[in-house]
Amino acid sequence: MGLQAKNKVDPAFSMSSMTDIIFLLLIFFMLTSSFITPSGLPVNLPSSETSDIVMQEVSVTITKDLKYSVNDKIVPREQIKAELTSLLENKKGQVVLHIDKDVPVEYLVEIGGIAAGLEANVSIATKPF
Image 1 (cartoon, helix red, strand yellow):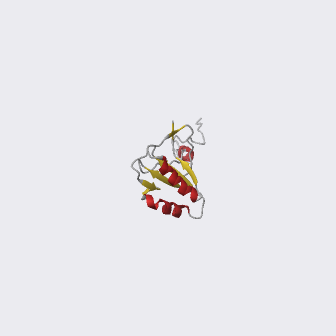
Image 2 (spheres, helix red, strand yellow):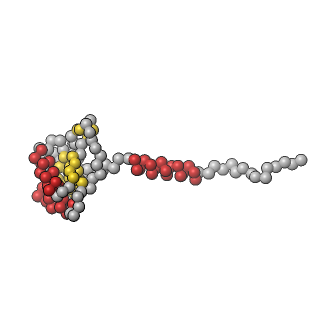
Image 3 (tube, rainbow, N blue to C red):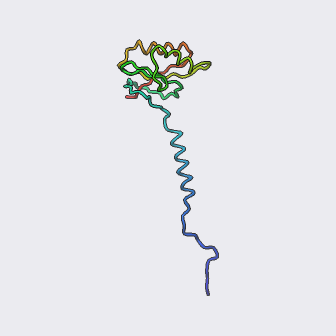
């Protein structure tokens, strides 16, 4: 009596479900990771107990040797207002200041005043303790 199964089991392992899981994990980690874009110029940020993550539209960086950049584009000090005006025209934007901790406060106040005059929300980038 030859009893044989009508349905044969395929011994091959299907990887399609495993690739679906990998892609779902990849999407999850991409969406939950922080959206901080590092500044192009090296800046030693001050420390703060509460360091909020803010989606930045415009980034202004001032280095220790007083080099200015707007969105990683090096700009002379005299042209900061014109550059911010062109980036923030007709909208209320978010300006994040990346200012070295050794830079005098007067430069921070100057750039913050320009951004506030353009009706932008101003935040100061810090690093957590």
